[in-house]
Length: 301
Image: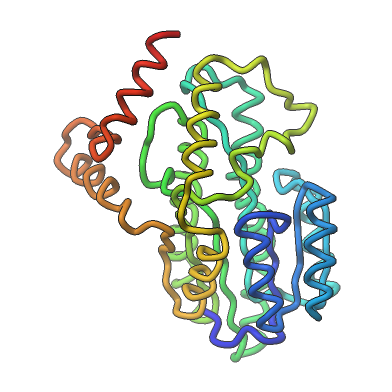
């Protein structure tokens, strides 16, 4: 929970687009120091120039969040420039689809590397720094926000590798919240679970490293990509809307952040099935035509 953002420092990964960029814009308006992190240099340069023009103190770093050494250097750079950050937004993420048995080892390494290990590195490197600052200053307030997804609370088919990464982030962040409550009243955490919001994630393969190059996409992966492009592109809630929800949640100490609360009915039916021991429910019960279309597409391969 952070009651006043002015003069505080925010570390934002995936800051070149989507939620990270929109949070940077809000942070700049609120008078925050901004640490902008992205793997895409041109997007990072553009974001840094925009925030600097808004009057923010900016530290921009091109970093692959899956790289432990690079993330450790980032943490050292942040501490040297601004001291312990107050807001850490572990937000960088990539998308991937296809039938779960068709994902290659490289697919798993890439998606888990960014979506899960990127969050792990952000948590393990910045949390101790924040707790140290809290012990030194009774007025210090710190908050970590980790970007998961509604796919971290649901198990939609043909996107298992993504689901696994985001379920892990939800679990990690819930545990982080509980662990922090044991040791400090000054540092807390939230998890962001967006649904379909127009960001750059459906085109995240643009930043896939060459050493983890994809095999020729399978038919199910191509179907998943097309479905993702359509769903994300047609989203009515904007990245700017979600960024404002993030700041509102940090200011109020709210843990779960949803872009589409109306999608929680699917989460409830999944949880009820778990409690009752019944088989997983149809994820397309509310939109049967979508499920039927996917079934037909996959069975016609």
